[in-house]
Image (tube, rainbow, N blue to C red):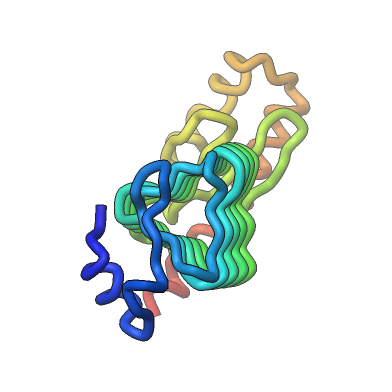
Amino acid sequence: MKTITEVIALFPATQPQQWRQHKNGKGWVFEKAHADQTALIEGVVSGDARVYGDARVYGDAQVYGDAQVSGDAQVSGDAQVSGDAQVSGDAQVSGDARVYGNARVYGNARVYGNAWVFSPLYIQGTRHSITLCSFTEIAIGCHVHTISFWKKEYKKIGAEEGYSKVEIKEYFEYITLLANAAKRFSKTAAK
């Protein structure tokens, strides 16, 4: 957990008296920001950001700008949620992940690691959500695997989860779409 001196170093245009420690977690909340008392705040909530419900911001995570974190969502590690981004439901943003702009991360989506510079690609399929959560991994429901693993094992996993043949085909089309997007995104990020 950061000290007030560390928080001021992150936000040098602010003064210590503009910050308060959250009762649940002892993280720091800026005077214009809001964090419900039911939320767990161990990180930093600044700007006009809002944290609602049972959402958690912990580790060295930061939520700032006009960003919102709500429901049972979690932002952890060194993750940052900023701009007008929203993280809600049971979504998780962790590691060195960055969610910003008008990005929406919701449902059971997971965004993690350090390679992400785009809004996550999320599709709600007929059975489970599917999320491109890094340049190399896809999450379908609670299963997170590499793209190459999904391409090899999608039929087996689909059958084990009780998917019909039509649903297995549907999800393979999603896997292919997200795999192509990951290639394109990684090329753009490398520039």
